[in-house]
Image (cartoon, rainbow, N blue to C red; front, side, top):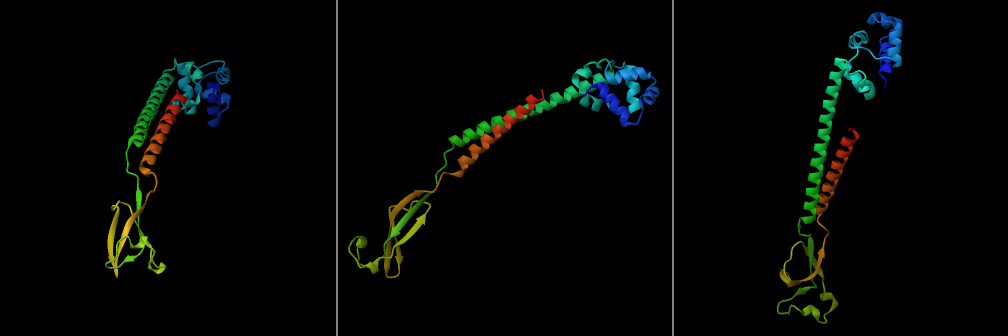
Length: 217
């Protein structure tokens, strides 16, 4: 916003006509008109009188008026101080976003690398099968021979760890011989995927933080 437009809006905001405002600030109406149209800029003394007449907050004014316009008011000490405060706040703001960008990007890169390098055992399922009850005195390979169909009572057991090539379980009427039948991978561990996705997300946050800081330069 132009400084002249700002002055006019502040005057209208407090309900003053140009003649009333000029009288209150003890300046000529023609001079106030030049200030509002941008044909002239106030001296420090006149600026102070306008601030008092309109109830202007100088720090807030510097956030509303264009930088090029503020440069024309740098000889006014109150404006100069407000500009310095604003510039200091902006530098602090930018340093904060740059620091956030560095932290996010570094942490994200380290997390993603950890995800690629981390060795996590893959979950496995071991399946053992028994084809029926082996009676006392019978060989454990009895079910590899021709037997009546009613002797076959297939049972499968699943474990998340290897119990060896086979094992025996005593049951009523004899025992069951379970042999390893299948080994299956249940899926890739989620830990690595979570680490890598988390790392990428933090790196994106870092890029976003840097973008915000560069937009505010």
